[in-house]
Image (tube, rainbow, N blue to C red; front, side, top):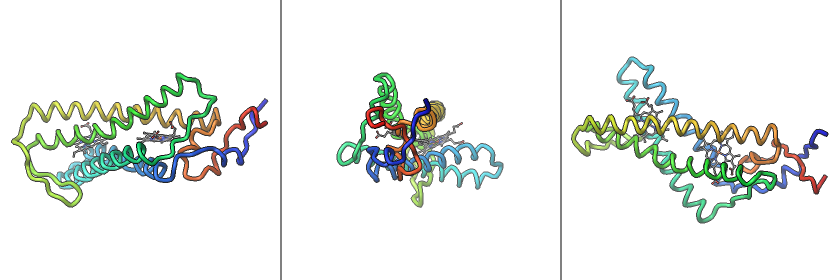
Length: 199
Ligand code: HEM
Ligand code: HEM
């Protein structure tokens, strides 16, 4: 029999607090912008435009780091963290937690490997409106090393986001167990399957 979908049940779904939800979706916008800028840099012939885009890329990356550090402090002190649905098996819950913590780790480490790559280039660079002077002399070997680490980190980041978003959509469209409703600003449009005991 097809599961019965109820909006009232979705409305009762315990959700993350407003700050966590706002920061989660803002981070998504920043991550898309950071990847978008990085991809576009390679397509541009004009050096001045490529430099401007690289400054955007670096600035958005630093914004992600700052927001994620603040988000973790909020999570550990004030956040409301709703439990995952009881219908999820223990291994799936573990996978969701490992994925979330790996994402937190990358949101903090990826910008740092970008900064390392930038600093070892050995010339001044801009972040937002600030001009940062050259901090060390040019070191080609370190630039190569950090460029490779940054590139692999970006692939890993993209893969984890893909898994994470895919899982969220699978929960929403197929399982309909309210996982996305926990992170959604309004629970209205996201219907969930009513728990067996309430049918
Ligand atoms: C979460 C944050 C970040 C993500 C997801 C990210 C992702 C990327 C990606 C996908 C590339 C292209 C890789 C390649 O093929 O070379 C790249 C390149 C680069 N990133 Fe980042 N990055 C982030 C933060 C930063 C930060 C904070 C900085 C420096 C302050 C930075 C500096 C660079 C530099 C210098 C390049 C090489 C660009 C070029 O010369 O073509 N990144 N980044
Ligand atoms: C750059 C992209 C994204 C990043 C870095 C990211 C990161 C995270 C993190 C770290 C959490 C764990 C929250 C916590 O427990 O403190 C989370 C939860 C969640 N995210 Fe994302 N997310 C991204 C994109 C998306 C997208 C595109 C969707 C939906 C299609 C989504 C849906 C969810 C849902 C439903 C939760 C709550 C489920 C849970 O607690 O595991 N996220 N996200």
